[in-house]
Amino acid sequence: MKLFTGIGPNPRVVTIAVAELGAPVETETVDLLAGANRQDEHLKRNPAGQLPTLQLDDGRCLSEITAIVEYLDEKCGGSLIGATPEERAETRMWTRRIDLNIVEPMANGFRFAEGLPLFQSRVHVIPQAADDLKQIAQEQLRWLEGLMGDKEYVCGDRFTLADILLFAFLEFGGSVGQPLDPKCERLQAWYARVASRPSIAG
Image (tube, rainbow, N blue to C red; front, top):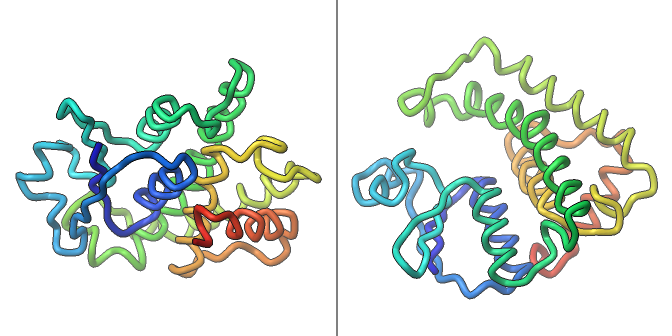
């Protein structure tokens, strides 16, 4: 298998998962800033021009980070999704909530503001929505803070795709002017725990 990857939080999600699983994946960097992901060579692999993209041994390609991580988890006998139907449902529930409520407004808040020079010729941008989207992401983080309680990870004592997704985008947010509120003490402690894992710290 070969992972076509590059800069940004979406590729970061999959590279963390690969490290967690010890997946036998070759990697190749695609230059996002130069627009190589929008050239014919990459568009043949991923018609949406997105990164990351996983090329399977038979030549087929998978895109979308949740699909890639679920595939690798199954192939490697991992535990990033869950061992039972109940665990898998819980992981998918939280991954969906984090993706829709935090990741999407945070990412678009960046694309429509700081990232505008890079994205305005690539996607439909709405600059006037940027500040509101950033506020939505912060509101949803405070909502999640209130639900963390004494849990070690988002799904209790299990480290899952939900944690990887949230971590990668909070890491990204911190680098583009959308840091995690210091008042979110439970999430701050969670972030430190996740950051110390070998798949990330190493």
